[in-house]
Length: 75
Figure 1 (cartoon, rainbow, N blue to C red):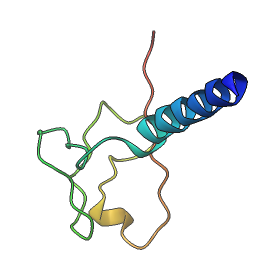
Figure 2: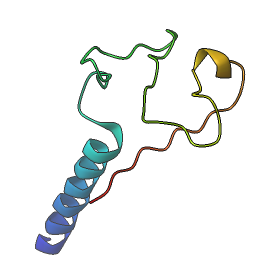
Figure 3: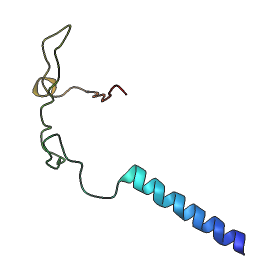
Figure 4: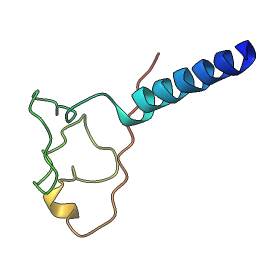
């Protein structure tokens, strides 16, 4: 009986942690300016450093194409 209760509590705890990690706890994620990003609206323009092999791209110029945006940092 005790082992069943401990197992049930452990499974529930893992489920809550997974829901918190994967689903988030609330609201929409803010964009760079701190505003909530809204589905169905145009994405804010992405700015970055200098480009090496081409002119800078804009999201408007990529409309209708599949775009992969990879965010990473040193450290």
